[in-house]
Amino acid sequence: MADISRGIVTLTINPAVDASTSVKKLAPFTKMRCAPARRDPGGGGINVARVLGRLGIAASAIYTAGGATGQLLGALVAREGVQGLMVPVQNETREDLTVFDETTREQFRFVFPGAPLGESEWQECLASIARIEPRPAFVIASGSLPAGVPEDFYGKLAQACRAHSKVIVDTSGRFLKAALEQSVYLIKPNLREFQELAGMTASDDASLIEAGRRLIGRGQVEVIALSMGPDGGLLITRDLALRANGLAIKPVSVSGAGDSFLAAMVWSLSSNGSLETALRYGVAGGSAALLSPGTDLCRPQDMHRLVTEVMVRPIMSQTALPDPAHE
Image (cartoon, rainbow, N blue to C red; front, side, top):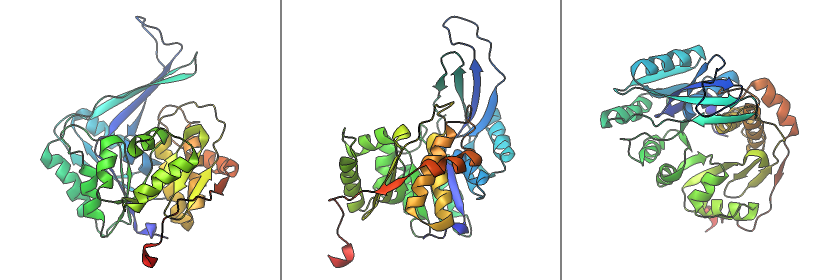
């Protein structure tokens, strides 16, 4: 088991202030009266730190912030009780919008691009992590990269942290591929993101495990935690494959479900180090986020209630990799 008790740091290089509201019914060319807006600090790493804090683990959140929206973001992070380290940037932090249609019970998410960062700004994010003492056991980097940031940024982070921290990356597309070139401890793609990463369309467990083991065999990652929405989750390591069932939940919101999945997994690992238990809590945490309105994320009481409904079974696979020590 990794010593997570030494500290967890999250990095969000493309954060946002998440505004959410609801309307009676969405209609084109119509003035729609909205419910009072709720605003939460947003971005993958910040969301993970928020959930970890609710579960009793004090994670430090490093994030960029600029302009008036950046100042609001800082205030919202502090309101959550998260220890934040703000990296000042020149451009304004973005604000995203989530709208819930009360008639159709559908959620609409409007995500704006993050403002470009200069080289000195993204370099400062790496330097901020390098200055942390004592070195964190885990560094969790999550979310997309804004313009101006090299697509191998997460790879640079993994390379810089490899000697002293286990790096978890939760991103997608070319950003994830570039990160894996430098090897990371754990990734948490959803099914579509993993299929894109592996260049496949199959979704059966055997094919997913085989594809995951190819990445593991190349030394790119140690643990793959695949979140599969209503179908649960799949966890893959060199010699272990675990399948968790999904839960039948009518979602109030889908915002932050993946971040809640990851945070619940890390919280569980800090307790007993069991990957099986961590997968159970990951599915429960992601499912619990569906019950919270807007961008409120996973509530601990919902996670603890739902975890009793998550069953995990091992999958016997023919694609287990040889132990390098015996090659």
